[in-house]
Amino acid sequence: MAKRKGWVAPSNSPINSLDDGCLMHIFSFLSPIPDRYNTALVCHRWCFLACHPRLWLRVERPIKGVAEPGVFLNLEAAISAARPGDTILIAAGGNHVACNIQIKKPLCLIGGGELPDETVLTCSRGSDSALEFLSTCKIANLTIRAELGCCLLHRSGRLTIEGCVLQCEENPLDYLSFPIVSTATAYPSLKKGQQDEHGLTVARTRIEGGAKAVSTNGTLALQHVRAIYSRTSIFFWFEVGVVVDK
Amino acid sequence: MAGSSKEMEKVLLRTADGGSFVVSRCVAAAMVAISCEVEAGEGEREGGILVPNVTRPVLAKILRFLHIHVEMAPSLYPITLERFDKEFLNVSVDFLYHILLAAYHLKIVSLRDLVCQKVADMMKGKSIDEIRTTFNIPNEYTAEEMAKITKKYPWIFDQQLDDEKGISVEKDKNIENEGTSKGKHKRTADELGSVEKDNHIENKKGTNREEEIHVESKEGASTGKDKQIEDKEEREGARRRRHSE
Image (cartoon, rainbow over all chains, first blue to last red; front, side, top):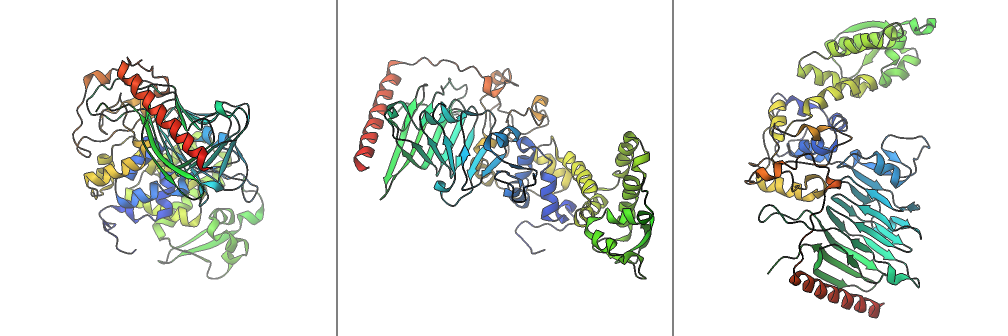
C-alpha cells in the first residue's frame, strides 16, 4: 500500500488493513444519515470511500437486463427506495419522466452526463411541477423541462441548484409557468446569527422561458442576483432567502 | 441434503502456509472464486487446489461456516443457524477482519455480508469521536476541513433549527431508525466551534421536518417593499432575457 498522508500502520488501526472494496461494502450497510456520513468525517480514506459513487443509487436501464441492487428504471422508484442522505445518479440520455415527484427526504440528484443538457427530466402538461422539494436537497447537472407548470417547486428546506438547466416551454400560456416556485416561509430564528433553514441557492444555472425565473409565494425574497450572458444562453446565480436587514 | 454423490466427493484444499483440508465438493464450490477449479476436478488431483490469500486458521474457520451453512443447513432450524452465526463471529476483531478479507476475495457472499453487517453494527449509532476510539483511528481533520466537508453536503449536514446538539451520546433515539430517519445530523461542539445549546429548542426534538408548522412571520411594511423591488429586478431580468433571445 502506498504511503498516503495520514496513513497509519495496520497494527494501530487494523480496520484500515481492509481493502477499499471491503470497507465500501461495510459502509453500504450503514444508512447515509447519520451513520455513513459520520464515518466520512473520521479520516480522509473513509471520507473518500463513504462518499464514493459506487454507493450511489442509479437510474438507468440495467445493462444485462437483470435487476441489480441500487439500479432503478425510473426516478420515482429510486426516490422511494432511497434513504435520507442518499445520492441518486441519473443516467444521461434516455427519456426520464418527472411529474409531481415529491421529495420529502434529504437527497442529492446528479445528472450522469458531462453537460446538464445530456440528462433531461421532462414534466408533461397537466402536472404542477416536475420535482417538489420538502426537504434540504441538492440537484446538479440536470436539465428539467416543463411543458406547463413549473420545473421545481420548493416548499421547505434548503435547496441547492448547481449547474442545471431549467426550461419552461414556449406556449400561449407560458405566463403561467415559472421555472422555480418557492412557497417556503421563513420563521423567526430562535438564535442570533443562525443560518436560515429555508432558502434556495442557484449557481451557474440556465433558466429559459416562463414568465419570470422565480416566483416566491412565501415570505422569502430573491437576492444576490448575478447573470452572465454567454453567446447562447444566460447563466444565473441567485439566492432566495430571508431578506437581511441592512 | 447435499444428495448427489458428485457433491459428496472429497476435494483437497491447501493454503499457502501449509494447511490442507479435505472437504466435500459442495463446500468447496461455495467459494465462488475457486468454484471453476472445483468444477474442473482439480480438487481430486494430487496437489489439490491452492486457495489464494488465506492462512490456515482463517480457512479452517471459513470451512466450518460453509460446512454448517451448505451441508447441514437443510436439516437445521433457522434459529440454530442464527445462534451458530452469532457464536461464529465471537472472535477477536483482528481475526474478524481476516475472515472478512478472505470471504470477500473468495466471493462467499453470505459470510461476507454477515461479517460486514457485524462491523457496520460496530459503527452504528456512534459519534465520530466514538468511531475513532473504537477503531483506533487518529483525527486527521482540522476544524476547517470538517466545516468544508459539511458545507459540501448540505442535504446531509444541514443544521436544523430544532436540533443544536453536537454528535454526542445523548442522541435522540428517535432518529436512529433507518427508514424513518428524518435527516437530522449533529456536529460536535468542539469540532465546529462552540454552539450554544438552547433549552428552548429541545422541546422541538423529534418533530418531523416535513410537518413543521411554518410560523407565520409578521411581515412589516418594509419587507413588502423589498419584495416589490426584487420583483422589479426580476421583471427587468426577464425583459433583458427576451431581448437577447
